[in-house]
Image (cartoon, rainbow, N blue to C red; front, side):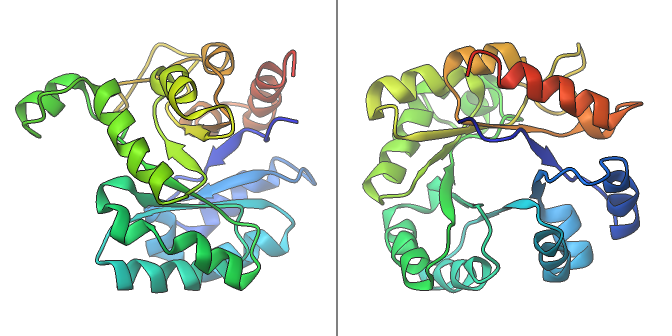
Length: 232
């Protein structure tokens, strides 16, 4: 069974969040809390969402020295989130003990390594990062680190999913933001529709402004959910 579409809660404060969630009545959702909401409201917003029965994706993209990241993960898994993220660029030393921490805490948490943000274009990779590889090649390199560290999968754009599944197998999970069914890409460059992402074989999709900026967020969510689960 496919995961529910994950809704990115890119709100400035808890009031905006609560006003948004009221539109979904008693629907139990899969929700992503990122840096903006976390730095405004702190861990209490995570506890509140869990207490309401929602699934939780804590998207803080941890990247620091190994000991700091390990302790941060230990703190986060106590909240029993379904997913947390760390940067694959942190390397094997930073990543290698994280699943052991999850197991020790008895948490249901999956850990995903962030490869290349969907806001990064090929031009940025070449000219600013000075990396003489394609985005697909660099994503596969990051994924190799994640696989070696025994994490659950990667965060990537929809356009790398097929290559990742071919190299690492279907059990290697791919979580894909950048889902758009409208023309505007905003700050995300490597985007795709729900139908494309489903056909590529992604395991999780994250949808933000497509739902949160909609005139009818609940109806838009149901439409995206129906399309995502089609032929499942």
